[in-house]
Length: 461
Image (cartoon, rainbow, N blue to C red; front, side):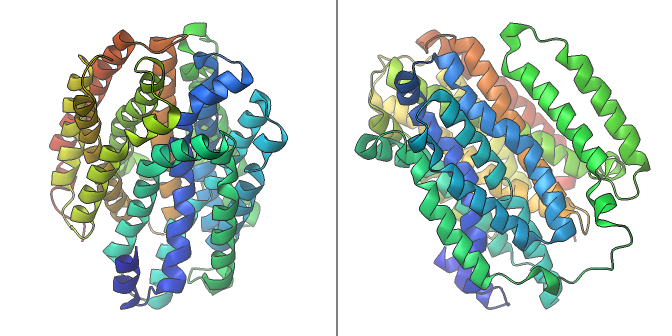
């Protein structure tokens, strides 16, 4: 992180700007992955099944999938600094709830609030960076954008390790309590160091704040996403009546956004911006595979292999090491097609390896298989973010960034649904083998999509 700050400082993006920018967005991924090793202890503590406890994963993503673009829109409209600070305050408040209310309802409430609060960070950070470039009349340093991805990537990779250590030392509530100091530190630094929203360089608003937010569009988007994801979260329940609700809401959303003076989601832009739409699809495919592995392996290691949560977390170290190495190697790279091809090919190979793994395999083999999945974690995040920053229209970076995270969270929810169906009441070797085949299939589609995408051949000028 120090190298990122030093390099950025030379062109006007100094430590007082970079440090708060790099801390906040890390809160969502670290909460995403810490919970992986806590699912089994929480299920035992609050007496729920494996299929039920997965709602702690799905609930955060359900809220985040709607909130990320909404927070991005608010950041674009009212200013990213105040949205950023509000989100951090919500995160700090959520951290104490499971200690005060150690029930499944209390834990779920905390996860939902964490989803809401952490949703503000990434789109606000991307808007802050874009605003700072306009304020300084200088190009955005690639190293800072890479630093934003690396910050999230590193915390995502160490999440299971940190979660395992915290649970072993202090109990499962500690993975929530750790959010309080992290959020407060980020809040204070952002309050003291980030530029005020009144200093933004932007054109005069031609419509009221109400129209700029586009509440009808936001509501229709929320209905569409929630109905679709609620169906995906529990496919075995056959909630098919949610599909027509999602379809009607989506159709109405498209109709409304085509006519809105300032749309919440610029449908025309998405229709005509094929590269950005493909970036969203690529993110969903690759990260569906990644989250299938993170959550499925953590439960399998604890249940079938018989490891403690802390030990299961340590099994993720090879993944984190490989991801860190890859992220550093591509941090300053201008070309993104090669890394994206590797990011799709590697998990396809890893999925094939998972398709034959068993609890009797040597530890070293399991660690090698997990290390393979460090490649997509290290390459996909940085390269897709670079593509997004180039492809997003001016003045819409917050919403565009939020939608990219919605794509990732859609992948996570699909992964949660698949795990719930495949594992049922308990993980098994056969279930993990099936998940391996699914990962291989999804990432094979991402590989074909990336190879055929000619817009990735050279950076956009």
